[in-house]
Image (cartoon, rainbow, N blue to C red):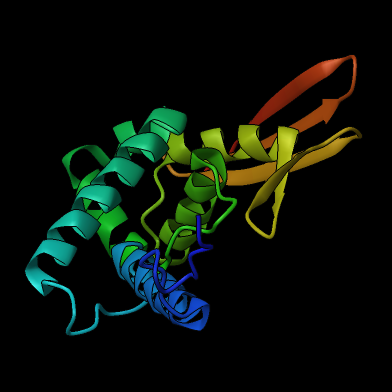
Length: 178
């Protein structure tokens, strides 16, 4: 039986396969970047469908953060989704990000906007006692940690510290307006 060459078997030039794979990989990357809000979709994609899918992914991301940060979600109430959408559009999710780390970044954004409620501040201090976030990765604290914040209702200063093996201690210092 005669030996069949690649072309006779229906194979094309291998370099064409490599070019097609590169083109597909580039298109896939553009699609993913458009879905997570890092770039706009190119003309090759249906922009309305891309936007609908991106909105659905942003809502799913918001639900994950709300689940990981219940006091934050409760304090914002019905405004949570709208505020998170504002945040999410300008802060695409990191590759290694978790809902806890994403929520901590969202808290930072809210705090700068002056929209952080007391309950959310307490939840943030509790988180910061146990973890710190570096490059969107959560790292457990293994040594002494300290946190503090000014609560508005009633006006008080809260100080918290955590000692390994001994746990957390919280102090509420009432402040009186003169």
